[in-house]
Image 1 (tube, rainbow, N blue to C red):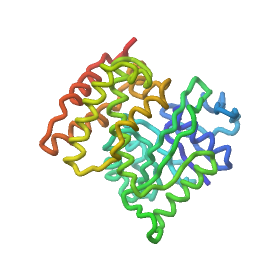
Image 2: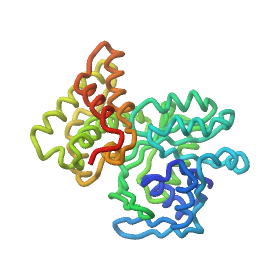
Image 3: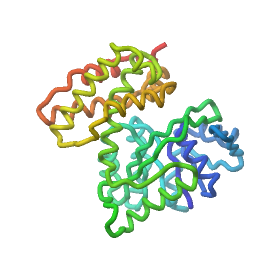
Amino acid sequence: MIIDIVGAGALGLLYGGKLLMAGNQVRFWTRTTAQADLLSLDGVTIMERDEEIHILPDQIQAKPISELTDTWKNLPGEWLLLMVKQTGIDDFIHEISPLQDHMLNIACFQNGMGHLEKLQAALSKSLLCSAVTTEGAKRAQSQVTRAGAGETRLGSRNIHIGASISIEEERIYTLSRLLQQAGFDCTVSNEIDKLIYRKLLINAIINPLTALWRIPNGELIINEDRKKLMRKLYDEILVIFSASEIKLDEDLWEQLISVCRSTATNTSSMLADVLAGRGTEVGSINGHIVRMAQKSGLAAPTHEILLHLIQGMQSEGVS
């Protein structure tokens, strides 16, 4: 099966590399030609707890995303795993626009909210599948280190497990099986919206605070002042979710603390972006919380402050 991976960062290389080694044809699509050439020259090594996976240069198919549409028209892929961040969605839509009348199967791995609506408007004939994952990985040049095995959940708003399976649903189940065969804990969920909002809450608390304080995730919970601010952000979200009739697990605070513990040494994606001087996803995370509040006639003052603090950071990053 041909699988296209758009975004050859740590997660893209982890998923793509393991899918490749499981016998699939994988094509990596990068932002620049130089990035593609580097992959083709060096190959990739995936470090896991029990093994090292060496993917040789001649096994790598890597090209700049500008060549994706012509390649896909000549040889369509079965699935496209969209691994770019929210900040790269508009560029992806621009590059993929020649395929707007085609039927693509796209699994979206983005944090935050808003990308599905953009993608659906631009690619109305395509199947969009949400992917919520707790997988973590770090990249150092051509080496990717998997930070322990997480979970990957796939779904769309039209999935109803237990009913007769539609063609679109069967495609999502096929992707789930492929990921299982590649070594991922992957299942299809009929509560994907619940998982998306759970992840939004967790990201809206962990990401901006670690970015501001420049600390790994685990250090959020070793200081009571930090935990108090976490709780304030958490309580604001619960009020907003309740007004929007979004119901989540009652033990979500304990789940949030557990995520901080299980990812204690991780550098959040927002902190990594700030340190590298890149744009962050704060607008689609905390910004989305603020917009949800406004839509319900509420306020989210703490989230709004974080939004402006992150957006107002120096473009060259924080040292």
